[in-house]
Amino acid sequence: MNQAEQIEQSKQKAEVLTEALPYIRRFNNCYVVVKYGGSAMKDKELQKSVIRDVALLKLIGMKPIIVHGGGKEISKWVRMSGKEPEFYHGLRVTDKDTMEVAEMVLFKVNQELVAMMAEAGVKAVGLSGKDAEMIHVTKKEMPGKDLGYVGEVKSVDTELLEALIEDDFVPVISPIGLGDDFEPYNINADDTACAVASALNAEKLVFLTDIEGVFVDPEDKSTLISEMDLAQAREFIEKGVVGGGMLPKLQNCIEAIEKGVARVHVLDGRVPHCLLLEFFTEKGVGTAILKEPLF
Ligand SMILES: Nc1ncnc2c1ncn2[C@@H]1O[C@H](COP(=O)(O)OP(=O)(O)O)[C@@H](O)[C@H]1O
Ligand SMILES: CC(=O)N[C@@H](CCC(=O)OP(=O)(O)O)C(=O)O
Image (tube, rainbow, N blue to C red; front, side, top):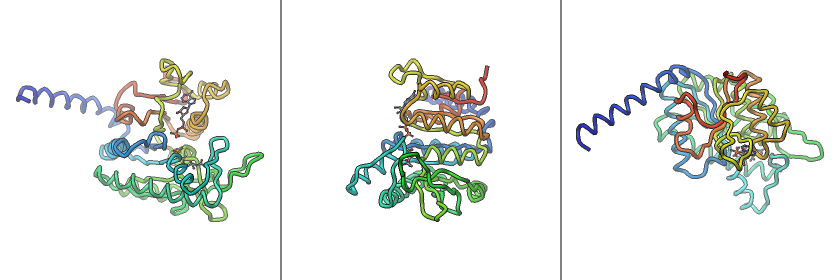
């Protein structure tokens, strides 16, 4: 590259940084909860790239918190232990042995993300909801089915989170809660992220998943909804537009906004730098769910 080309490249970089400035200012010091789901955790390189972007958000002054999943990895290990994974309405039926497997796998995933954050130059602390009694749950009751050790979040104590963030650490949370019997309970990671973001009154809650966002028809890529308000989101659920894993996700989006989270986003975590595209561009990417329509 000659000198003129080098100057041109530097100019372009400087322009990108300058354009990002209003967004950096807007989210400075804000809690941003990123739910990193198993479906978007395809390979280590992709995970490292997502974690580097979260590290960047931290280094420019935001307060990110990661809540991770690992459903696919848990299923793999449950199969290796000789059992067939069982789900009921999207929730894993979790007997004692499955809980043990889930806890081990989630710990492994958690610590891998913590190490990736270290590699990106940011100190992270791995936690489960049991630490400092952060997440208390009740046993999830479903008519006609005993789900075993599946928890429904009862309360989130943010004391430890706030202390860690104050001391510049990034919390990385695995979806395990403490039951009334002081046993570990398996919580859906979307529910966990929603509860944590609500308890912190987060500015943003971002779900990184394996689809570009919410579609009217997932088979037709031209039907991506880039923005919807609460009324629309409720209508989508009532009319059965969303199904599969998107249904509980959208329910969580609605609940988070009702409980005070300012903006919720559903993004394709498989797209490199999707977080940065969402944070630092006016239009953003994926689907934004807002309390009221912008226009
Ligand atoms: N209308 C819709 N728009 C987008 N995704 C949908 C829709 N209906 C069903 N889905 C499904 O929801 C899935 C995302 O949920 P899920 O697999 O639970 O993600 P994660 O593991 O990241 O939590 C998508 O891969 C898609 O197949
Ligand atoms: C109760 C329940 O279903 N818990 C989930 C927790 C992990 C999770 O939700 O991971 P993803 O976000 O990758 O799906 C499970 O055992 O799979």
